[in-house]
Length: 89
Image (cartoon, rainbow, N blue to C red; front, top):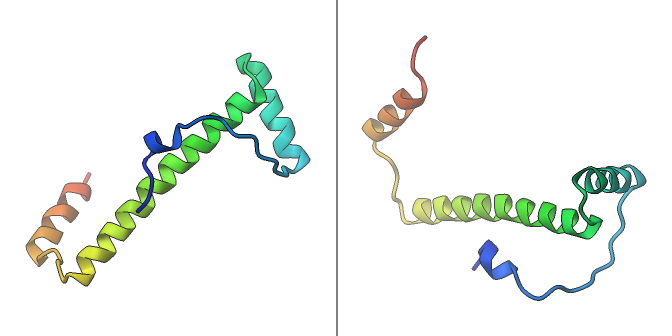
């Protein structure tokens, strides 16, 4: 089971990681421009990254589960969805 973002907000822990110098400079520049600490900006970036990818993986796994259960859209449902997104100009 994938964690939700709310489950990821726990007490802070220190980790060590390597960044290339360009990424480090960009992080420092952004933090300075925002008047924030580098760790704060990095923490927010990681949370946003995880939120996006956890959402994506959750929906992919949900689709796989539906496929494994042979729950497929009918041709009519596919046509309706397609027509909603593909409106001639």
